[in-house]
Image 1 (cartoon, rainbow over the protein chains, first blue to last red):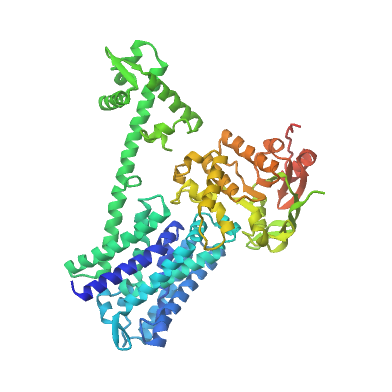
Image 2: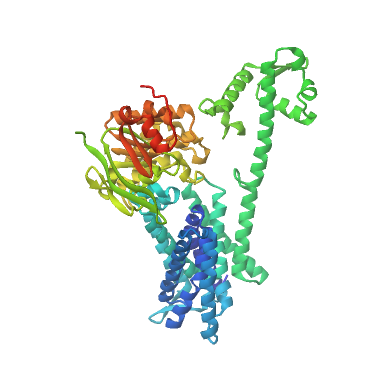
Length: 386
Length: 244
């Protein structure tokens, strides 16, 4: 690996981490689409900043772009508040308008300078190492590394300082307001961080893909944990992992780095979506199948409890009278035997003491929905996990 | 005369310039367990939210023990409607209850052992200690409501505002909750509850406010909970058999 390669991976990772942090809260606040709006509508801010400074890495650019981001959020909220259109419509109205203003400004004035629509839409990470920051003649690294590094530092500081406030206002806005943590301040704080991060990431991945970096790591992490801190940690990890693997994928394919990073984000999400231990598609399918069997088991046990006559308790009766297929009848019988809930002698099934208590408790739970009695049963049976 | 815990003067609240509460004057004495009753859209939740500064009124003022709410925040606990939050949020029962202590911490400061202890005690009071590490989406509706109540208890306030705490809970939980509310009253706290079930008003509460955009009446249940006020509030002839 040469130093340019290391620098690119470092920039990509920092961008991914800086995006994953506000992204986690955007996902939890069901505001994923606002990041799309911000990423597009900061374009006029960037263009105006560029006209003034002639430098794509100027801090003024970041300030102006962040300001345009905030204006977008305010406009969306204003339109929504009129009650005439819903939030998604308001977003759809505002950001294309802002973005097109930026596009026209570029086309009219910036034809002969380094600011083209392609770069804005897709970014170009490969060129990042060429634009160096020099302090009194000494090369201290790529400018974009310093920019995204500073943004990340500020983001992490704000996160550590206001974690509690972010959490409570995301979970329960009403409570946050009554406790004196103004949800509006926290909301606009988060929007400012999102806007600034987007500007910082813009250069590297462009307006379209920055949305993926904000949303995909958080959405993936959401499927794996029920703890906010772990969700943040996982989102950061997924972001960095996609950044590095994406870089090498692009290297191998000789293709766009930003495109490859996003592809990796998509792949990671797909894998987790399928295989996550409790929320994944396969786990859910397995659980539903188990629940069906458990309901059958309960039906069978209840039947045994209600009938003392031998005719009703014969092994074959399961198929003949309860009307189950052979396989299902066997599964249910095996499950009951495995749990010592029944005994079979001469093909006559009887409830054991354990089976008897289990049935009463389970029926009781289903009728009353009071689950203090069945805590010990939750371990073995999906049915009682609510 | 008793201390006045909450005083509302000429309060008017509007959504999009359409008033939903008109010129409300209300005095809530300290130590009462009060129900706010009225039909859907009467502005019951709005009244609580306006008192707590969550909604900005277009006119009027609210004082808590003689001072504006901003200065008295720490005296007040709020239990929002259970449906107002996303129960799939990645957190545990204990963590939600801890949120009740955030107000006394103020900005930036983090909860420590003291706050955790307060939260655990509150969980125990509502009989949910065994569920402290349970993810909140894995709780039943009644348990979620108890967690909300525990969160308010962890605030250790003097005045409790609750928005429909009995909504969607089973009979056992309802009794458990009302017993805790009665204990709060016994301890000299003031409890204000948005309530829907008129039948249980005389049994649960000692004070009642009838609300339908305007205030219809407020006072002791035994004096004013009658067919006349119910009819005025609900607009139809209301007959409830009041057990005295």
